[in-house]
Amino acid sequence: MKKKLGSIKYLFLILFSIVAVFPFLWLLSTSFKGAEEVFLFPPKLFPSKINTDNYIGIVNAIPLWRYFFNTLFVVISTIGVNVLIASLTGFALARFNFKFKNIFFMIILASMLVPKEIIVIPLYRTVLSLGLVDTLFGVVLPFAAEGFAIFMMRQAFLSIPKDIEEAAIIDGANLFNLWFKVLLPITKPTLATLVIFTFIGTWGDFIWPLIILKSSENFTLQVGLSYMLGTFVNNYRYVAAGSVIALIPVIVVFFSMQKYFIKGIITGSGK
Image (tube, rainbow, N blue to C red; front, top):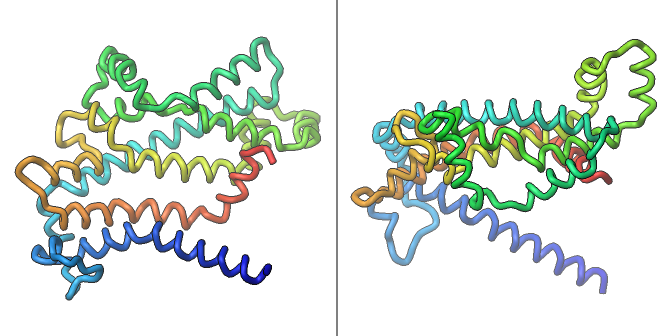
């Protein structure tokens, strides 16, 4: 009976994996197809021959590399500010006792329940009043500090034994050294998890950059690629090729930091 249940479980996992991977395989296949094969019926998963013209075409059709580096700037800035604010706030919430500490933490938790789409209008008005519309800083600023990141860092700092903190204070460490040199390196798995989550979320973000950016030279990669599917242009081959290029950094970041990922999730969950 146990053997049958085990077989069913593995069969279910295999089927689920196929369903999860299939959209990526279709995207990759479309990026190598010719124009006549994209709308072929019945559809073919694999192209009859590998065609790299789509990749050359997307680079020539739009300033892809400019969009790429715009997105990279937004991602690096968001990660840097998010990690800095989250680690400082998490350190304070985990290690200090102050008035209204629990209320402050509950407000942070409540912010995690609010969908981004609900606060788009007030965020836009704020960015507009700061004169940051149609700038990359306007894309970065509203989401530079997130409740989820603060929660994760607080849990990571709480998991560190008090003995380490007390020993560092006895050795003469001030608050900055205690945070930066003693406790923060111990939270490396959680930091890596936050970097992965922030990278994936920011790299693939579409709605907010679409709203805030007006000039084509400031477009991020996702916004720039969306203009290949406009009223007069529907080049799915180019969009597929551009999307594959856009996926490469996400895959590289995930696999380069995956050894910290599971450990970071466990630490951040407080288990």
